[in-house]
Length: 208
Image (cartoon, rainbow, N blue to C red; front, side, top):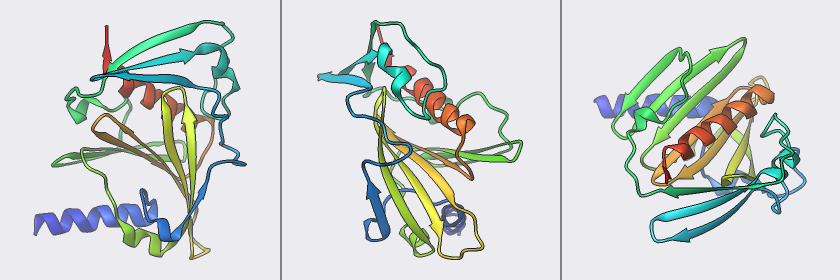
């Protein structure tokens, strides 16, 4: 009974602000997006056994649209090494924010942040979450994005019921973990939260 309740609860969340994959009802956009980032920017990524090396080209960061609010003009390359085979407690993978609500389940934690009309839901999961039924009620646009840490997806969920608002979702996989950030609007604050969250989570996997 508890599992059924959890499932229905998560379905309800994703009906309003759905995430992840249902290709039959999804428009995939890889360019001409207001959020599109030139693939020549960002990270030079290489792999060696369990260690991933990311060369952050700091002089290119200022060219990224919407994802980084601070312009960085120093012309140097910062090298970061990550071990994505690390086991991290998912409860430690969240930013230090004043969350208004929190739900914990086996292999999944959801935290809600509200501030000045902005509603953001952060989720960390050990497994991909696919609530395909949510897409019955939305037309979905899916944007392939790239930042200094690699690729992620940005979604627009447009309700078929025109009286309901559009919702948005950022999604990326880091190691064996799935990060989902859902929001009711997109602005500089939201993009800053996504950038800072990605930066923080990646820092948990850093090695010397």
